[in-house]
Image (cartoon, rainbow over all chains, first blue to last red):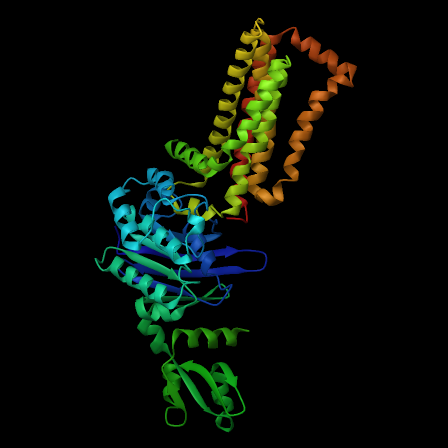
Length: 285
Length: 216
């Protein structure tokens, strides 16, 4: 198996009113990558392309070094998916889920599944429709862990979870990758979760790739610049992304290198991922 | 091929809660048999009923948004479609076997001689009716999803109904049927071939439709 578990190269997908254009990023083995962007940016479309739910117009997707379309059956033996909504039949019990899906996996381990159910506090005779959101997420994780998934694809798994449940989920993820043999692609709006666990970030906005690289690179690429309303100059306005002006001051995002020029005149802060997304999104409108 | 069988098995788990509806088919079959209906009538009833009921799987699939489940499992789009066809036709085959058992049992109880020719003709016509209805419906369901497709999917039922009642209104058509009935074995072989062709065309259409479907 290659060093990169997931490689997306110049992938394009066009719809009537939206185009995902030239998306290129790689997820190395043993790391967590956050996939971020505002609503409608193209995150879910990217995940659907990876899972072959959509046919790409151009580009290549390799998973574990193999083409994602030609080797779909073999690849998906080692992929686990957790979605923002339960994708099992509501009337199924946990026992029925195992009966229904375990036959598809060569490496399904019933013992591990039972251990996961116990660890997550899931009972096997209750219908899935009666599970809470957190329990549904844990069940999808239990299924992923039970067939030795090496790549976890998470599409907004923590939306709708309270802070305690999210914290628990993130702990499970960190535990999952600690052997260095597994990777996670984590698409989410809740960027504070990524700040806790993600090693890499891919940022997509309006179908375009804005950034892909390590979390540190992203956070060091920009600074938040603030000052009084009467201090803003035309030169600064040209360099700022997504400027926000109020009666008392302004705030915006600026490249870190350019920002250094202004460090004696304005307030410079390290940005959060949220602030980067907000200002870049505002700039693009 | 194994993945298609596993997919058909998965469809069974998805469809399980609807199986109780087949009790209505059993009741109808018993009733029609007791009334002395021909096997052609019984066969078309089974075709109609199973074609109507078995497509509920698309409704359950849509309601539970199972596309993501299918996308997560290690099989491809063709396995999903082949599995669906296998599931649908196994449903039909089991219903047909049950109908034959009921029909033969009632004949036996009423001390009537079983008309083997009529029985085999009934099976062939039933298969043709079922193949036409399902063969038209399934690609439409794969393309549009259950909610958008269900109105369109009444068309094959109307088509088959029209073909069934045409002989009563068009003497020429009745003449053709009578002529064909004189070569019953040839007719049955032609029916089986047509059913197979309809099935093949339907499968290929389903693959194209599901690939292009915006629901995935």
